[in-house]
Every structure is written in structure tokens, then in C-alpha cells.
Amino acid sequence: MAVFQAIHYICNPFLKRSLKPQQSYELQFIGLKEGKHEMDWSIGYDLFEDRQAEEIIDTHLLTHLSIEKKERLMNLYFEIDGTVKVNCDRCGESFDFQLSTENELVVRFANETDFSDDDVIFLDDSKYKVDLSQHLYEFVMTALPRRRIHDDGECNEEVLNLLDGEEEETNENEIDPRWEALKKLKN
Ligand SMILES: [Zn+2]
Image (tube, rainbow, N blue to C red; front, side):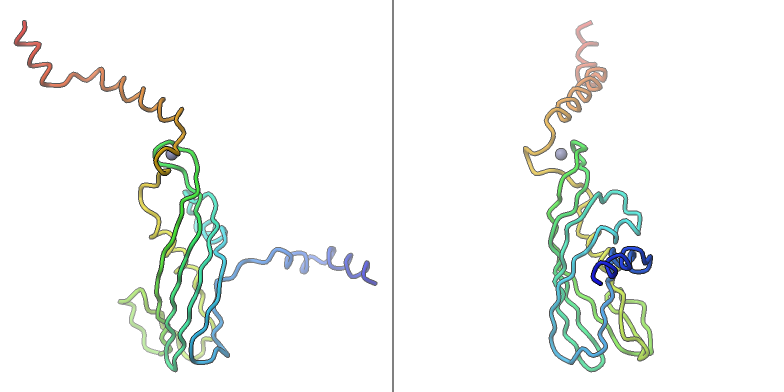
């Protein structure tokens, strides 16, 4: 019987798909009692792949989510930690950038909407879950510095030497204006 179940599981395309579930970043708050709650989520690479963030090569990120649920609102605190694989802006080789960031969001249960504050999500009474994927994506992207480089001494030396050589070459062709003036004086 177990063998038949296994074959059925493998052959059924619906079940096969469920072997590789799409990561969800939805917070279901229905049934969540008022008070404090904690949960851990892993932030998958799919979040960046779906948004064509091509500079992100891979991710190993976890977010610890603390929820404070009140009658008409929820305070959400996110502590995101882990690594983001990016290319170094100095030597071009990929490396794991250490990322650590804390963010807050407020979910208000109200029919009125005020879009002036990006940190507040308004939900009407018919909603029982909230998709946090775009927020998580933005938290990570804004925590990344514009210039991402290896720690000192960890760059690919060969590439750096090559780049140094190129810089010297271009500098040689440009004559410092002070030397130019001196040359004229000598003549
Ligand atoms: Zn580097």
C-alpha cells in the first residue's frame, strides 16, 4: 500500500508541485489573540528573483518577527539577519555581505486609508491576512549600502593589481599641469 501511495504521490502533478512550495510572506492574523507573538521566517532568494534584483546573487536571511496585536492595530517589528551574495564593487568577485537591519510596520484595521505614511498598512474588516513580501524586499534593499566591497584584505589581489596597472597607464598619459608649466620654464 505504501508503494502505491508513493507512486501516486510522484505521478500526481498537483502533489508534485506541492513538493516545492512557493514561499509565502503572508501573515495570517485571523485567530491571533491580542497580545504579543513571535515568529521566525526565512527570506528566500525567490523574493529577489521575482523582482528582478539582478545584483542579488543569493541570500541566506532570517527575519524574527515580533507582533503586538491590539484591538484595532498590530505593531510589527522585524529583525532581519543573514547574508546577501553580491559582487564586490572593488574587485568584481562575489562575496557574502553581512546584513542586519531592524524595521517596523503598523497595520491598522480601518476602512479609511491614508497613504502618506509608508510604514502604515490599512486593512478593512474583510481582510484576515497581509502580504509582507514587498516590505521585506524593501527592508533588505535599503539596508544594502550603495557601494558593496569586501572587508580589507579580502579582495582578489590579482584583479586589484591589474586594475592598479590600468590606472597608472592612464595617469602616465596625463601630465600634471604643474609639471607642464615647469617644462615651459625650462625651455
Ligand atoms: Zn573585492
